[in-house]
Image (tube, rainbow, N blue to C red; front, side, top):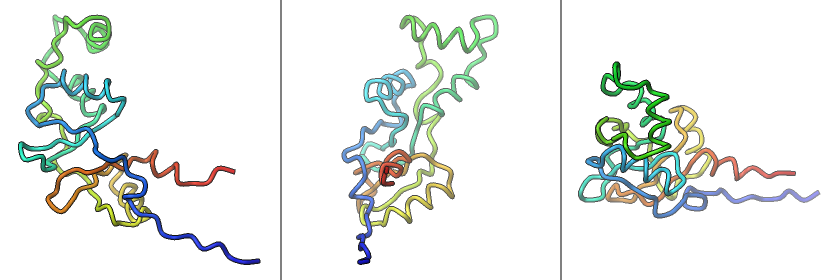
Length: 155
């Protein structure tokens, strides 16, 4: 039986190109709307030169809402979420900015890295996405755990 030779796949082969990014000064309403409109769970945070400075996710947003300004006497968290979903009267942006909730040490990859190396890094760092950067440290792609799972053959 002849062995099937498989070539090594690289990050550039599976990454989502041209990722949606957000600036660190954006408020949390803008973050929530971007996540919702683009149907994504996280995104790179960039500075005014489009260089990667962090990463932010839905989980970071929820944590901020849970830990945010004191809501005692106003409304509880679940009331807040229900109200945000029902109307736009609740000002999520009052809870801070992207800079307040982002992770400042994003896990990155290069487009020419083997996907196995990046998969191990993601597992070790316990992250669900890595930001693919160019030589100027600008985001050019994103690889998620779902992107990795799609590489396994389904029989």
